Length: 372
Ligand SMILES: [Zn+2]
Image (cartoon, rainbow, N blue to C red; front, side, top):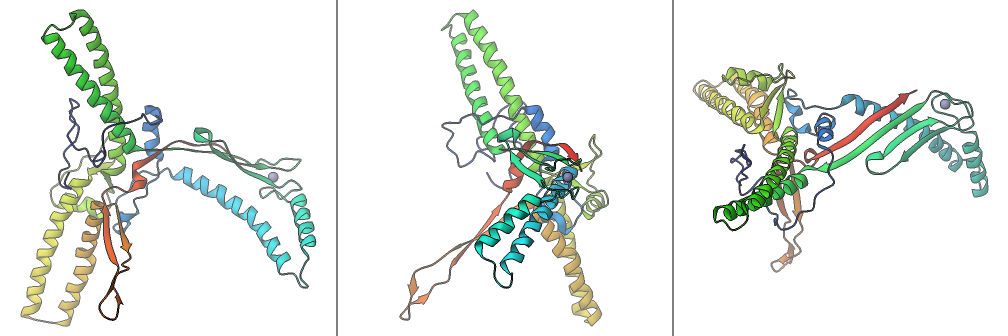
């Protein structure tokens, strides 16, 4: 699949194109069903999944959904824990730097003493300290904090960390299911056509498979939507530069039910590219003017134009074209020539259309208690 071919790979009738963006380079032989998060959970978690699209901050006009309150609270938890742990670290430093040096026995004694008298980070009472803990696995994995003192303060934090799912795995699985069910359907159709089997039985089977097909197709579409939401959609800020560019170029964007201006990534790149072409021709005109009557002021103006407009738009296009770009270095051990000089390493440029983070959704993440 080429980068430009971004037409839907599944149509309304459930016909799937040969190569979906997620299933390429994989042998479609065996698929096991991944641990399925319930689909309604999946839908609700989309808003709470982390947005790691830092690439667009350059224009700072596109935003994606982030569950800010979750992260704020999570950070508050870790800050509290950090502050609590720091006190012990500070004490360790004190013992280690003591003059004259402290014996190991003495340090152990001091440590025991510290732990015995440890104060709660929230109320400052002691002994007992604060209980910070990481409990449970899978969907019940949570972090907690509470007062450990005899007379407990109000501190009560319980945060469920949720579970993550890798979306392409689900897309592969359901794509495969749908394909197989369709194949079965076709076989029954032929049986019916050539009177190979009892009509009533065939029709019964037919209906069952058809139902299964509908269910699987629903699932597939849901996961595909989740995938697109995280990877193919861009929300434009009404105050931002891209939104203005869309308007200037007569590209109408309608707000969705939630009042968000969402555009497809491909469309975004297209429009921005168009705008970039305009900028470049403007730059050429400016350069020609400068050539005719050179002046320092004009030169500076041109340079600023290049830097403030052209390069910024170029970057925003590149950032959306590839969500992740990284370099691999392959060391070259061969030596060349009489002097056995080292050959330069090979650098491999790896642009990737989808960042790994955006292909993962986390569900079941919630704060059930947060009292201090
Ligand atoms: Zn306390």
